[in-house]
Structures are given as structure tokens and as C-alpha cells.
Length: 115
Image 1 (cartoon, rainbow, N blue to C red):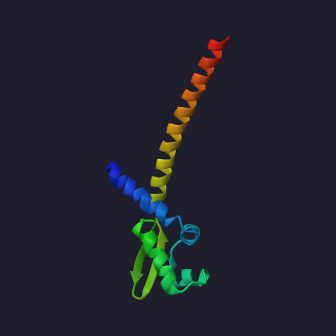
Image 2: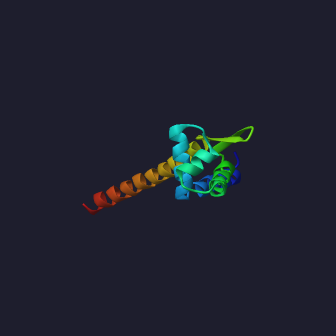
Image 3: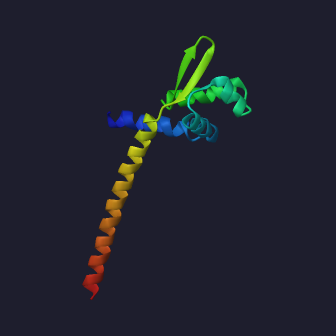
């Protein structure tokens, strides 16, 4: 995946989970499996319209999928985008660990020169 595309994708995913309601919806779906939109709306004391808007944001980020069976819409969590964010954080952490290691080496070099 190109760096610009990956950056845009990460932004979409992080934007989607920046809202506490969407994080909660996603957590519920991960823990309980696919649920109908009406079930989610009932659990969160929200209108069907409000829940649908949150679900659309999660869908756009690839965090959930929707299956339609007649008039029933089942929403299911998809964790591939979570792995993408986790991979990015791991790379970032690795860079910081290397920088901290190098800083420690420089500090030690400075201490041995002072002696």
C-alpha cells in the first residue's frame, strides 16, 4: 500500500474511533458478534438514525460490515483496520526505542569522557 494511501487510511480509521460512541459500538460488536441495527439502537438509547450515522462512519473506515437480509441489517465488526493501526503504532514505538537507545549511548559516552 502506498504511503499516502496508508496515511489516508490510518486517518479514516483513527477518525472513526475518535468518538466514544463509535468505540463503544465497535467494542459491543467485537464482544457479542453481529447485531441488528435496531438492537444497537436499543442498547444505546439512540434513534435508529443516530446509530446509522455512527455505523456509516465505521463502515467507511472498514471497521464494520453490513449484511442485509430483507429488511434486517446485521452489523459485524472487522478487525483488519485495527491491525493496521497496531502495526503503525509498533513501527512508531520501534523508532522511538531506537532513538532512546541512541540517546542512552550518547549519555554514556559523555559520562566516560568526563572521567
